[in-house]
Length: 458
Image 1: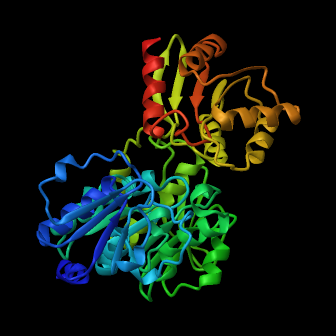
Image 2: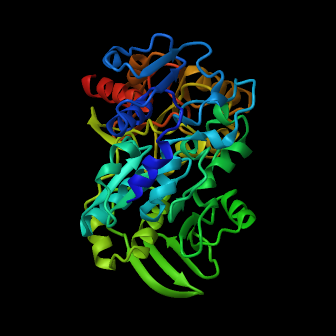
Image 3: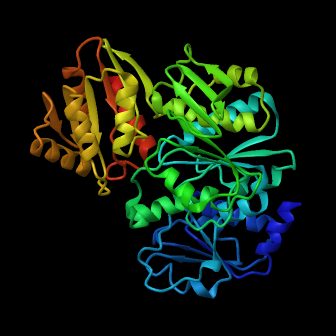
């Protein structure tokens, strides 16, 4: 059993769990279930971390606050949680000591894993693949970055199981194994505060296919500016399926208007007519759909089973989510948008946005592509918020791209009032910030829920 091999990797090791959020707690509980008396060290930079629930464990030591990440080479296994950055560590950590739930799970269960990554769309695509597979078979799991740690499901997995895994760049960064089925959706500038450079971020993403073997399967975006070059440079041994709008040799899938067609050396081998499919609006979602169908076909699902399942998938919250019509105005919540490309995609998907909310935490992303888009596709009313919004507004001023009406505020109540005052009846107001949320909110979900509640209660 693969779980026994995983446990052998941990047994009799000197272990530290670095970061005690959701995944760190999951790692602790997994180890404790199988090794009740193993000595453990848990280290977290939060000096006020509440560990009262673990006071009865005499075999665990907690290191909190400044200096939590020192002397790591004294441990055999460093279980790094995804959010932990090594940017400020001033000494060399031996890579063979660094591991994670993702790394060990892929090492021992890779043959059963469908891994999905990308800067944007990975949650939607992972959920869609899970939905389609679950429509036709039992024993399918959804885990990873989408919310369920891998160690929370590992005891439930049988040889017949399929695990659909959303994988972030943070999870892939120190991973030395790839899933047998991999999807790479897109790569845009994001998380540069963690990775220091765009090249490092891209390199982490490509770990999703870098260790694949012959007979494995890679689905990737052939239209992306960066991905084809990374694939060509790494020369994976796996079978590939390219998706996008262009013609490619071999097996590929293209979307044109409402048709998704699979080709093999120019010959159409399958076709999906999505003219009546309204659940995932926008061209970017057609890319997600193409990737999902490619994986499900590879796993043996029939055309009609895939189409039937597609019709019942409703999408995820905070992703161009229709909040409702209030006072004759349609409101949409796309709080997941943390980069300029996703805001552009949302505006294009809705085909007529009257009021747009931009901004949040400023991570130094280049917003020129968004400013250029707004110059070519003017939106009458824009609310700019947070440090990123302030920078976008300054760029609009400098480049003669100011909207007809705008406000600059960090008050979401004022922003929602602006939406109601400036958006015409029959018009559309969209929250698609193109920036992270944590200057003002805990996460993008909290930002989206705040926006929705303010709209509904107005």
